[in-house]
Image (cartoon, rainbow, N blue to C red; front, side, top):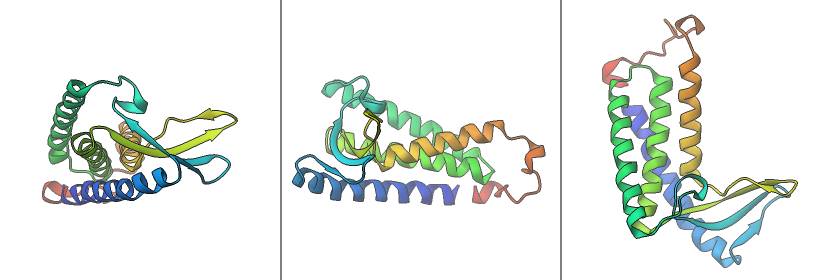
Length: 165
């Protein structure tokens, strides 16, 4: 559990540092800056849930904070019982990303999103480091759910034991 919690802390720190720098820098650029032909840095305040859905007022903000904290608590219990590294790191990534966005909702009133990928006029919704960690962690959990013991998990050193998980 300890390495996964360290990963969570690193994600929160990277997320908050990137936001501290990018909020000011992107706003100084007029709200957006083209980096490549398919990638921009933009300033988007997300008051809703994933990809700006369910935009809500102040009551919704605090409901999302409480719900997100409850999810983190549930994932923490799952992490505590986890004995394999891969899902432990996956849970650590999701928890770290969720905590990064919770900090935004509490401190800034909304989640700051910056990364804008686009291709042929189609834009992926803007996202941040925390969103990336959540997405990667969920993908890792999905991948792990399809693995079987015959996939090399048994005896591969993937078990970390209850004290290290």
